[in-house]
Amino acid sequence: MTRLIIWRHGNTDWNAASRVQGQTDVPLNDLGREQARDASPLLAALRPDAIVASDLSRAADTAAALAAVTGLPVRTDARLRERHFGLWQGLHLTEAAERFPDEFARWRAGDPDPGAGIETLDDLGKRVGAAFQEAADLVPGGTVVVTTHGGGARQGVGHLLGWDHLVLRTIGSLSNCHWTELRYDDGVRRRTVAGWHLRAHNVGVIASAAPVRAAASASASADAV
Image (cartoon, rainbow, N blue to C red; front, side, top):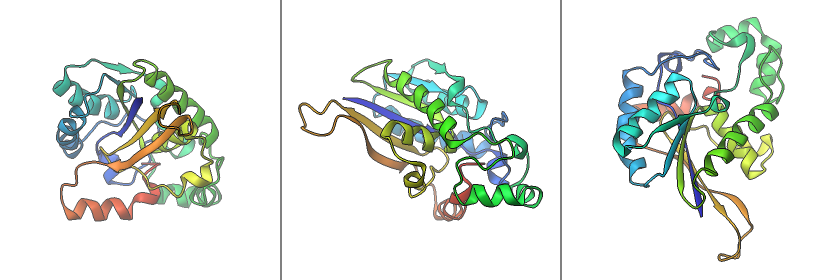
């Protein structure tokens, strides 16, 4: 049974400021590096056979923390990049709302193609989902950790599971340095439906009560920042 661990990168200054990153290459901050170091022993205990990461530095450097513990190399894949947020990249969410009120309202309502040059959810899911499947195919029957981004993780998971974007909106966003676990079952020995199955979601280290409250209040915008 192949296991896919989809790990969101650590915190950045743009995360903290609710500034839209998209595919802008924003580095981890001190908190993000600490989050990656703290999570790495837990992921290493899952005995991964391979590590694949987005080539954006916040994801690649998060993966590097796990590589330092496991000794595994990190493969990079540009398809694992975050959703491209078009004209919003670099803006604070409040600025995006002011400058693009119609598009912002559609985005908040879950419109899969809100405009403003933002990548559609369908395109995002296909792009990231294909990268997830190719990563899993590296070690059939093994465990692969894929380090990516909040929005990309959600849609890529949905692509593998065959879930509509409306269903995905009912699943909470990944917190920084938390992960989703998928397993592929051929349906023979366990007499289950063959294919990918969701086994766990938003798993990770909880440092204190304060970050948890902050993450909860920001969950609606986590896929953008």
